[in-house]
Image (cartoon, rainbow, N blue to C red; front, top):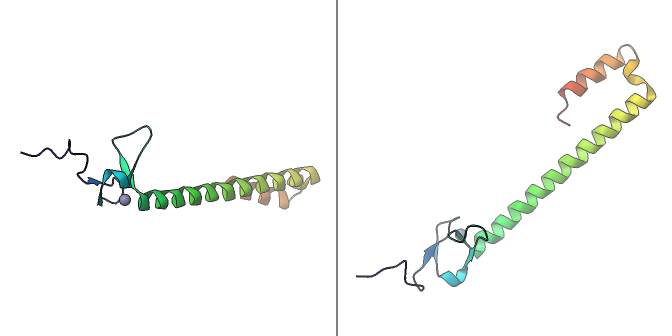
Length: 97
Ligand SMILES: [Zn+2]
């Protein structure tokens, strides 16, 4: 009778791609040590995390630009002008930023 869970040389499955790898080729997650990913998946996850961070940076930049535009419109009094003001408020209500 063999017990694979107790055998440290037995390959383990990566929790990301499912490939079986020896323990020495897997990275354990800090707060969830029972979960392990292979090196290739760790690199892929890092790339995805960087892409997510870049998208957040772009969204933050657009949000700040929209706020600067709103401040410029208000300081110029354009929001009170007939025709332009309602159009700007209409755009502002639909703006995701
Ligand atoms: Zn993997």
